[in-house]
Length: 527
Image (cartoon, rainbow, N blue to C red; front, side, top):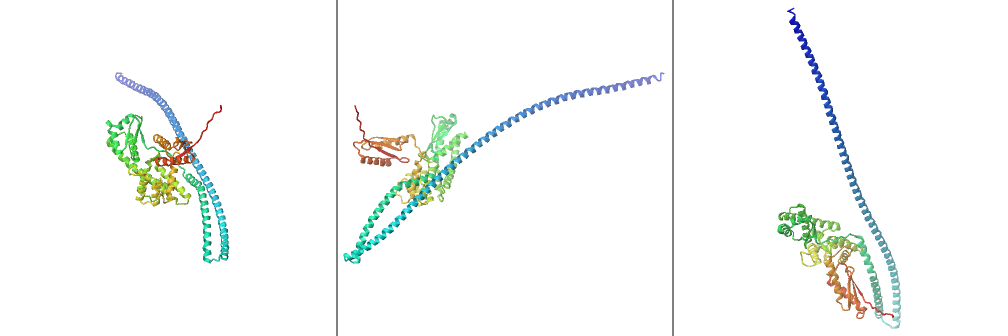
């Protein structure tokens, strides 16, 4: 018994240890299961929270995307509407141009039909006149033969004596008939010359219908603020003096807000100054060194532009073989104005009008177009060379190998010289048409008022004139004379003398009409 007791105790202890181990494993497993469940529950909550956060974020992204899509749709729609409106506007303008072209073509066809009818009528009249001359010639020969026979019988003259008498009689009759015929022809020519000239000029104007835009002779530059205006002036005027020295212009800075005026006699130099000042304002770095750099760069840019403009206008006018120097001077006319009219556009218009007139009277239209294009070439350098622009332009054309017709048209388009070529009066007429068309030219207020005062002053200087009024913007002068001291013949002479004085002493676009009024008023009262 003492032998088996320790063995039993040991087995019980082992069993207890085994049970404890099993219980420990069970508790561990149970604890592990509980921890796993707790972890799963926490993970599920976290996943749920993340899912909710992702859904909210997805909703925000979706809303933002919808807003951006809607904004893009509206922007595209506005852009489409604007493009559609622009295209419709262009189509309407194109329709107007086509309608105007059709109208001009119809007018030209009507004019051609009228000319054809007049030509047919003239041909019929000429044929009838030829037949009448043939009959008269036959009758004259018969009469001469009869007179010759009678003279031989009655006077017993020789053949030579009778022939000399008959020839003298015939010569006198022919002289009378020729004088009468010449007089009739002159009267017919005077009657038809004015209507024919009006027809030719109207056709030439219709063939070239251009818009007019008056240009200014003083350039203005916008200044964004007074602070920038002060920077343009610089400390103690340093910057503005450097700018005027580099460009050769006068810069006028006054109290006018947001504007600086650039003034210069040379139009190209004024354009260089304007562009340089705008670049300086945009750049913001305004100091003497930068001013010199920008002025040099702008000068090169304007020179290139002048060359391109000269070449382009030669292509537009279809004029070939012009010296490159003359082409460059044509480009300079883009920056030259006359009474507010751009001289380059005016020259191009005169070229086409000259061609139209020359074509209508059967002359060389291309040569007339060349004369018209170069007629004001002297205005490109008239501020550098002494003399009027017709003489300066003629010297330039002669120097660079232009034809005699072109040189004379340039020199005489203002009637300064006697013309020997028909193209000179054609260019002169085209120049007057271009200058007098409505909207082509304008004057400053001071020159306009001076011209009105000058017109009234000239008219009032003649004896017998009581009052004179300039009306219709200086296009007409109404002159009232004393009816007791001025008769009808003297009235006509006074009107003619006033017109001559105005032509000699004044410069004006177009023409001025002198209307002289002589009236007698008798007033009585019945009481």
